Amino acid sequence: MNPIDLRSDTFTLPTDEMRRAMAQAELGDDVYGQDPTINRLQERAAQLMGKEAALFMASGTMSNLVATLTHCHRGDEVVMGEQGHMFWNESGGAAALAGVQIRLVPNDDQGRISPEDLATVIRPRGNIHFPPTTLVCLENTHNRCSGGVQTPEDTKRVADVAHAAGVKVHLDGARIFNAAVALEVPASALAQDVDDVSFCLSKALSCPVGSLLCGSQEFVDEARRWRKMVGGGMRQAGVLAAAGLVALDTMIDRLADDHANARRLAQGLANIPGLRLDPERMPTNIVIFEVDPAVAAGPDFIRALLQAGVQVTYPGQGRGAARLVPEHVALVAHDHLVAPVAVGQGGHQVAHGAAGGEQRGLLAHQFGGPLLEPVNRGVLAVHVVPHLGLGHGPAHLVGGQGEGVAAQVNGIHRVLRIQECQEQF
Ligand SMILES: Cc1ncc(COP(=O)(O)O)c(C=O)c1O
Image (cartoon, rainbow, N blue to C red):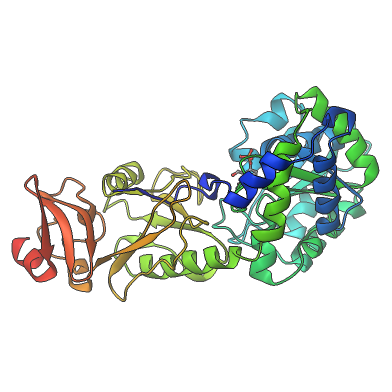
């Protein structure tokens, strides 16, 4: 059984068209600024973001780091939301390599930070005891806030406070096109009030590599030196940029399919006892839900899903208060799930995407409604976890379709009708 890989949209693979474009790309040495394909991609990126210039980067992490290096000096303070990717998931690069101190403010459920919170943490100038606040980092869509989106007005409100205090604003727009599609606005509208914006090609847009850092010409000229310093000066990188150009032409509009799949998955999951989520707060391709600790610990839940052929990810502690439970699980819909993820009324259908390569397909697994009713025995019929064989009994669900489920019962793999399951368990 091919696993259903919902860990991240970074698992997407280049399309045939991308591979052909890569093979045929016109190349030069980009450290000398002479790779025509890179130059075309950078111009296109700048235009899409409404900025003067853009710079090709190896990754989103490199874009965020280079933006920080470009805007800040060692000992400066950078303000960001407490759920920020830069804070959680970039190996402390801003502190270790840019030498900045990070100050956290709350994120709301869409990943917004409030202008009022920002105003209270920006340091007054001229006091030698204080690190100067030089940068605010925003994120749109917001990864750890369930792919939440910020409107152009949300961003403007925060940027106005920063700019009034002489503080620059960097937007980590790794998935900015998801936000643009969800909000039905051009990406440039989401970036118009920030000083620079980065976006990724290697997430839902299916490229193998790449991120673009966009801003004023002066900012990009300075960023180019920092990129060289951190080892990001690549030579015939047009071979990668060629895929990026195809992505910008062909992959943005289809993000709406990922959002629809994620929405249907979220709505179905919300019907399953023991899982907590609000589908209305998940406007793009990331679905994050809490697993009731009485049902399972997050890591056990994820292991059980894996055994059932579903790969998900685990954002770890601290999405609410700094605590270990309840745990959160994240699912990310992406290009390799091409048909709608179907989640039945009171039931549990999981999309079965043939992840990887050019294999694209989808098989819906339907675990019928009656199986989801709580029963005493805590085996297949209870919540989602026993469905997945979390050691409560001898049943281990391995798949299913229509009215039947495939299960391992006492180690024997067999297909059962729903009715039979109820009798068995
Ligand atoms: C919001 C956000 N920013 C930055 C990154 C880092 O991108 P990369 O993995 O290309 O370094 C990610 C990766 O998932 C992300 O979700």
